Image (cartoon, rainbow, N blue to C red; front, side, top):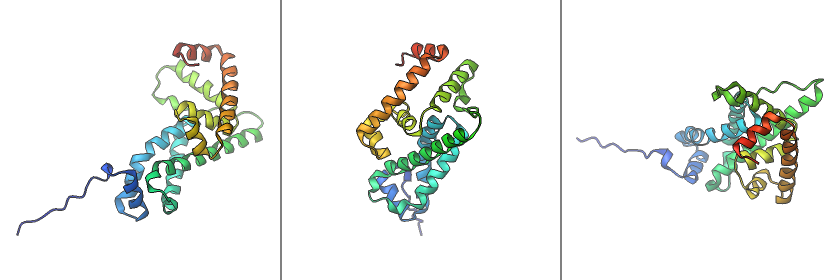
Length: 202
């Protein structure tokens, strides 16, 4: 008798909607596929927001723990990506607040442990990156997160407002606040100012 093999379609070619429904149904491949599809983006976002590869990996673990345990609360499966990113924003925001509180409680500002530039061999570039994140550390959590989402993640103001559950006017104020302060601080640092001018970044 001939043997007939049923080939299961590659889950990676399925839509976010199908993936979300499979995740909610407890289908075995859905957990691994959700991680493989979305974890890189969450990790990059966390790394840009926090300036640390190690912290970004911890954030990703926490985000997907929440996603997997609360997947049944997703009412619109086609919005799986947004669902996951909303958890990422909440976890990062909590971490930023924790770090800010810890800095206030300490007698001296903790040294910035920026390891975003692990791929940079130029020591000067790594130093500039550390100094830039030291400036970000001076911002309050909300304006910092708004700045990261708008300028580093290239989200629109409307998208930032939706993801952070804020009004558009609040996002605009936070962005203006962050941009004004960062611009002033960068201008006071000749090295950073020269770097940004060389890149053509305003």
